[in-house]
Figure 1 (cartoon, rainbow, N blue to C red):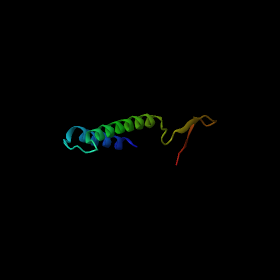
Figure 2: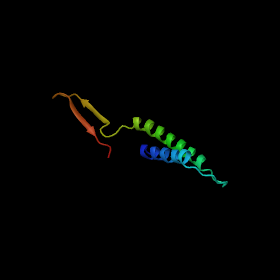
Figure 3: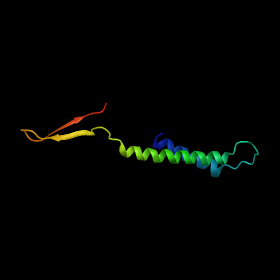
Length: 79
């Protein structure tokens, strides 16, 4: 789940929890589903941000190598 999906779930959950007024005695409570979606979206956002900061991204394995002609930069792409 990415950041966008987490924000989407929080928005849909907030709409179901706070903006929808249903007075039915059915087995499904729309407000509870809204709270569950908000919790799942918040957890998804949190996990996405935690793992986003730990990802290396392109060019992570690069370093300066000193040699007779001076330092040269080598980059290994992760594709």
